Image 1 (cartoon, rainbow, N blue to C red):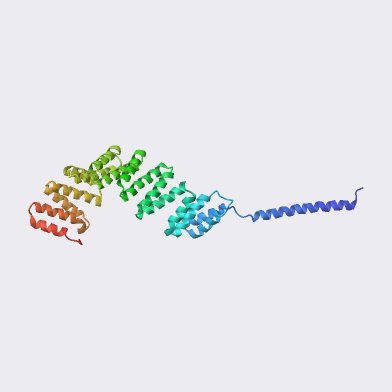
Image 2: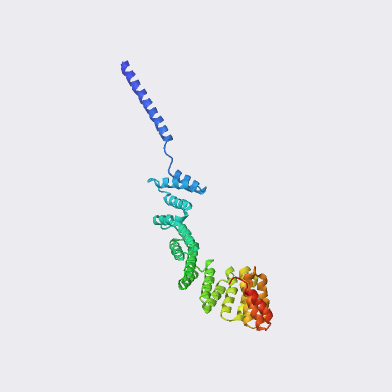
Length: 327
C-alpha cells in the first residue's frame, strides 16, 4: 500500500513543475513581444524621410543604422543616402561629403553617380581641371557602355575648355573609334571639327566634317555640317562654296544660327563683288534682328556695299546706324 503523504508530495511536485513551465512560457511570450525591431527598419524609415525631403531627420536614422555593428547588408546604400542628405543640408561642403563616400566605396553605381554629379558642378562653375579628373574617374569605374561614352565626351569637352586642343581632339577621336555605334560618336566628330575650326586648321576641320557626313549621313547633327563647312569655306576665302553650303542649311536653322548663316552669305557675296545679292542678304539679316545692336554688323556691311557702288549718302547712313551703341 502506497504512502498517502508520499503521493501528496509527488502531486505537489508535478503541479509545481507545470506552473513553472507555464510561467516560463508566459515570460518567453512577453519577452518576444518586446524584442527590438530589426535594424533594417531604421534604414527604411530613414529612406522614407529622405524621399519626403526631411533630410535632417533622415540623416539621424541613417547614422543610427550605420552605428550598428551587426547589420551591414545596406551599409553602402545608407552611406550614399546619408551623403545626399548631408549635401542637401550643406551644399557648400558637398565635395567633402562626396569624397568621404568615395574613400569608403571607390567603385560601384553610387560612386559613379557622385563622381558624375561632382564633375557636372565643377564643369558648370568653370573648374574644368577638376571636372576632367572626376569624369575620368567615373569613366574608369563605370561598366555601362552608354554611361562610359558620355563621360568620355565630357572629358573631351573639359580639355577643350582648358585650351588643350590636342588632348581634347585625342579624346574625341578615342570616343569615335571605341564607340562608333554610340549616339555620342557623331556629336564627338562634330565637336572635333569645330575644335579645328577654332584653331583655324581649316583643312582638318573640313576633313572632319566630311568624315561625319560620310559615316553618319542620317544623324541629326549631320544636318549642321552645311553651316560648319560654310564657315570653314568662308574662312578659307572659298566664297562660292561657302554660299552653297550655307544656303543648303538655311531651312533647317533657327534664330541665332540662321542669322549667322545669313550674315556669312551676305559677306561672301560682298567679297565676290556681287553687291545686289549682298545687299539683299544684309537687309534680310537686319529685318530678322531683334534690335539695332544685333543688326549692327549688317548695317556696317551694307555701308561698304554702298560705298563700293559710290552711293555715298546711303553708305553714310548705313555706317551711322552701325556706329549706334556703347562702343
